[in-house]
Length: 615
Image (cartoon, rainbow, N blue to C red; front, side):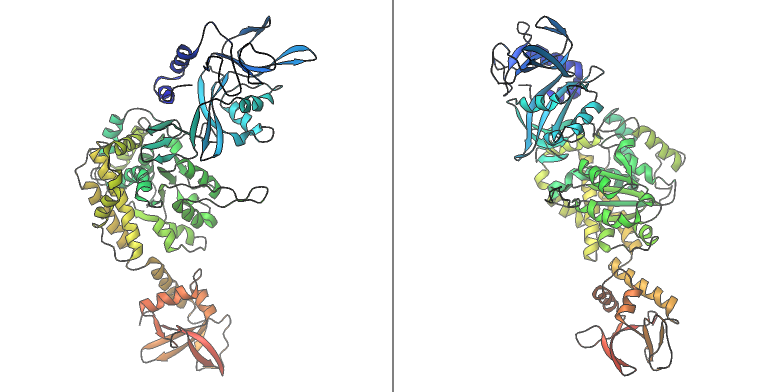
């Protein structure tokens, strides 16, 4: 069978080196058309890429029609000259018939994941003569196999327009002895193995399996040394850049910390450097132009991207382009790491996509402002999952320009370097994390860092931990030599950003503050038109929200339940009155009930007694 480390060699040495490796180890000059049966074995238990014959009945020895054969070069068969590729040799009406199926393609292994998600690991030559590998799901062969053929054609495999139906037969008949575990998402497969589309970090015979073979944004260019000098070391003195790169490196920590995803939204004016922060973060894992996506996408589309970024980073630019009606649900979905439940054609539940990612977003407005502009309210859970972080610093998003003349030239320098040097820091971080032996210590390390963040509510504690996870990633990266920074500096930066986030958000629960503000604004706008004196039975009010009464403590507003919902849309009565009570705005209550029974025009009504906000 092919060596287990061949995929690493494929990455390091390229197509021709692997081809020669296979030829040198497996090819037999004296048997250019060795036979091999349906189990993938030859007469001498070798399966050589080079020239292989595969019989339908699984027997060894001299091939008897019908059988498949694979040839990398033109060859002679029964006196006929045939070209390179996969051939099906049959007999029709007593005469031998040879049908070309596709260009050279070998089936190296059977792949599966816990008894499901079966596939085939294939190795084939494209139209440019280059060899490629793909772990393809067997599900693509359903029906006529058009989806599979379309994907292979897009990868450069040449397929017969006449005999293409034989491709499914060839792939399913060929059952090699090698079995490989298929990973259907990137990220941690075990504490010692991190799976990426075209490489594995750590130890284990596992391969990434996807419906699209070219869905690999984790490409690399340049060197880690240059990235460190021209991007990583610029984090010193720049909390926003430290947050961006730290968030990118924090993705692999979530699994071992047993934490859900979540992230940060960089908000600020145009051309301040927010997008540059995303570009720097993306360069940790891949080519920024491909790795940074926009909010202009459907929920289903973002689910697909998130599942490809499991245990790493999802960078989304320009929240202003998001679909307002889906924005809130998208934030919940991305942070919680679970896609929509969907049904098969038979009505059965399909397996839902799952992921665990750090999110880094940017935009000129906050999440709350973006949703309010279209008449929608944000929930505290949405805000905590995507923390608004101001990108207004000394020079745009930056504090230390490291010798550059202004914020724009500093941003340009980062963007230029990120276009040439990318895809090194993230994999190196994972390598060092595995080799360090610190994985089991991560929860304790996080707890110690979180203690340095001062939080005053449950929501603030969750936000503090998110900043602490980024601080932990930064501290580890500095200790691994990924960038140069004194110990404790990443934590200091994150504490600073957290304190600023807490000050801008205001004290207490954000949701409660929003309820109070909404009610106060409602009274300012409609206090004179939707309410009347409860003692005045003659005044007619259209679309009444309640009444008012004067007391020694000031005016008390008596809301109907419908009026209170109108004043604070998007919240249940119980949540509204809880916020009023906690703020001391609930003037009277009827025993255990927050509403009090009052007679209005001889009708008993349950009304909510709200104190004048300014009193």
